[in-house]
Every structure is written in structure tokens, then in C-alpha cells.
Amino acid sequence: MNKLKRTLALMATLAMATTAFVGCGSDETSSSSSSSSAPESSAESSEESSAAESSAAESSDASSEESSEAAPAGTASEEVGAVTLATGGDNFVVSSWNADDAEAMISQWEATTGKKATFDNLACAGGEASEKFNNKFQAGDDLDLYFVEADWALMFINDDEKTAPLESLGFTDANFADIYAYTDEIGKSSSGVRKGVSWQAAAGGFAYRTDLAEQYLGVKSPEEMQAKVGDWDSFKAAAKTVSEQSGGKTALADTLGGLWQVFAAGRTQPWVDSNNTLQIDDSCKEFADLAKELWDEGAVMQVDQWSPDWLPAGQTDSVMGYFVSTWGFGDTILCGAAGGEGGATYGKWNVCVGPQEYFWGGTWMVVNPKTDNGEECQSFIKTFTVDDASIKEYALNKPEYCNNMTVMADIVANPDYKDTYVLNNLGGQNYFEVLDQSVKGVNLNGLITPYDATIKSKFLETVKESYVKGGKSWDETVEDFKDAVSVELEDVTVE
Image 1 (spheres, rainbow, N blue to C red):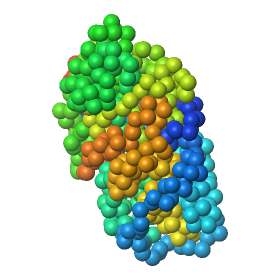
Image 2 (image 1 turned 90 degrees about the vertical axis):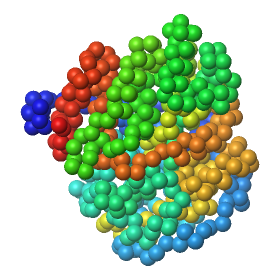
Image 3 (image 1 turned 30 degrees about the vertical axis):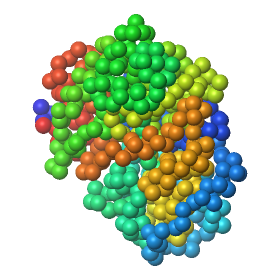
Image 4 (image 1 turned 120 degrees about the vertical axis):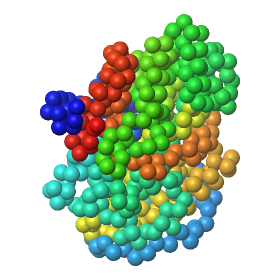
């Protein structure tokens, strides 16, 4: 069936919803990045999406002083060129969908520069922010620097009326030589123009209950756990063992959405080719078979990611592990799964890389071409993505796994910094070390398209409903997937 016939024959809608979760609120909790998520009941969850998260607790004054004193000297790459956008405005506006990151960043920037910024808090979930930003542009609202998330970043980055090239702020390739490559790919337009940059690297890992892991898999350390789940065949075998040993009571993995989040990171070709044609490679069938096998074995929980039943399951013995990204270790996913500080399973978790290196979420800073505060925009971006000393300060004080290889290598290697970002919920484990391993394995070179979030979400939804639960053949499932893409994306050719 060609694209036109599919479009005429089918009607489908995807209801987007988000759920906010209460965090632990301890001094050791990590920072979080906020974004949206489709419920698995309709589309499982867009793998770069996340629910709105709580803000992280502040580090102590002593920790702040230590990080400042130990900060590395500036490098030549910190020198930036002249700003060619308008300057001299009297109100520098920074806008985001919530305060989780923006307030901490503005506070540090103001203290460092002596300048002031006005925070425009959209007070919504990440998935709703794109529409609100579009409304602001249409209304001509005052907007200088704003945050976009991975799911819909290209909507703005590809629009020259809404985002300015970073070279217009004086930045060159040399300024961003230390950022992780995958974040650079997301920050570039489809024509290769760098228009956004992230201060965070949202790498993830597999967080698991240490007591259940020892009981059912006989492992006593993250290294032993990694050996058990270090590739998808091993992960599948371990999941079956856990299900069998627990009498079907305990699933190794939290949701199909979590599995897909990680598995999709291993794709080696883009979803849409240079001719704008949908590509379905062998990895699609591999994931579908993995999902069905684990579902039928009871080795993955049969609940929806971000549903009310998802995180509370971590306080029981019904699930052993969650796939968790940078922002999820503190006040959101893992803390919620433990029941908060003092909760039923608090302190009984560790983390390993898992079967596949991956990232989940992340936020990019972009600049309105009509800004009249170009110098402030340059300074703000430089503070959190170019200036090593400032990046290190933020990484330790937030804490945040930041988007700078040199800074993070120094932090991970220095035991003096460990107490600023270890979590009581992880029993004092240095989770930055795990994220440092994971982020190095993420490769998105040539894989980013403007359609990824929709296509990935539709694929997961179709696999779950048609193949896993519906019992359809793979060929029938592929046809259902193509139909869904045709309805959602009229610009994509489906053959």
C-alpha cells in the first residue's frame, strides 16, 4: 500500500501525557533533566522522553569552595570571537519548561558574571514546551536563550527564524572540542550547522537491586552484574534465570519502554534515508523477538513506563532493575523506585552499564536570532559548555554529569570529589564512573533525523500491541508499523 492510500485509509492519534514524581530530597541526590513521555499504553514511551523531575538539593558551601579551588585552569579553547547578533538589551530572558536546571544555572552565572537574567518558567512538561515556544515566537514575546529537548530539538534547530548559528555568538569548532560527539550531532541542523549545545551528557546505565541480584544471580558487585547482562544474549539469559528462580515473581527489567530506550541506541542506520524513505533494518526484528520472549517469560514487567504502577514496583520484589539515565538517579526514577530516603528498598541499589551503551534525554541551549542580548547569550553558553572551571563547578555542585570529556575525566579520576555526587541509595557507589563508560559508547553520527521521536515511538507501540500482545506475524506487524508512520508523517515515504 503506498503512502497516499495509507494516509487515506488510516486515522490514528497519540495522546501525550506526563506524570511528575516526588523526589527523595536528600543532600546526595543527583540533578535531573526534564522532558515528556508518551504513556506505554498508547505508545510505550518515546525513548528520549522523561517525566518532569524535581530539582536537586544544593551542595554545601564547603563543597562549593573545594570545587572552585580545585578547578582546572582555563584553556585556549575558552577564547571566543565577536558576537554578531544584537546586543545592549535591558532584559536577558532565559526560558525553559521547568526550573530543574535553569534556576541552578542562572544562579551560578549571575554569581560568576555579576549580571542578571530573567527566568521565564513555562511550568509544563517537556513535551508541551515546543508548542509554548512556538506561541511565544508567534506573539513576538521577549525571548533570548531557551532550552530544547532531544525529542523536538530539530523542529527549532532546522528553523532559521527561531535559532541562530552559534558562530554568530563567536563560537568555533575549537570551543566545543571536548563535548561528547553524540550531543554535537543533536545540536546541529540537518544541513550541519551547529545551532544548539548541551551542558549535560545524559548517558544511562542499568540500576538493579543488589539483594535480589545476589539471591537470584549470585552476583555481589557491579562488575559481576555487568558480566551477567553485558550484551543482549546475556541479558536475556539472566532475565530468564531471575524469572525461573523467583517462580515468576521477579522480572529483571522494568518495562518494554526501558528495553527499547537502550536497544534503539545500537541502531547503525537512520530511520529515514537521504530520499526520505523509511528504513526497517534487521535490528527491528531482533528487538521484537527479544521483547516478546521476555514478555512471555515474565522477565519484563507488564506495566507502562511512567504509569502509576511503574516506580512503586521497585519497592517490592516484582522487579530487579530499571534503565536509568543521568537525570534519573536522584530525585526521579531510581529514588522513586526505592520509595524515597528511608523507603522500602532505599540503599539496596547499584548500577552497571548494562547490555548497550545509551543516552536518554538531555537538553540543548539555543538562541533566538532576534535576541538583543547577544553578549549575555554568549556568556551563558560559554559558562556551561566551554569554560572548564565553571563546568566543573556546576558538575560538582548540582551535581551533573556534564558535557565535557576533560572535566568529567578529572572528576571521575579524583577520589576527593566522590562525596559530592555519590548517592546513599547506591550504597556510596561512584555512579559517574559507570556513566563515563556508557557515554563513550554512544554514536549518533549520521543517524539523526527530524522524524526519530515519532518513528521510534510508533515502532515500540506497534511491536507491543501487534507482535507481543496481539500475536500477529512479523510481516503483519511491519505493515501495521508502516501504516502508523504514514499517518503521522506525511513527508516520509513508506514503501
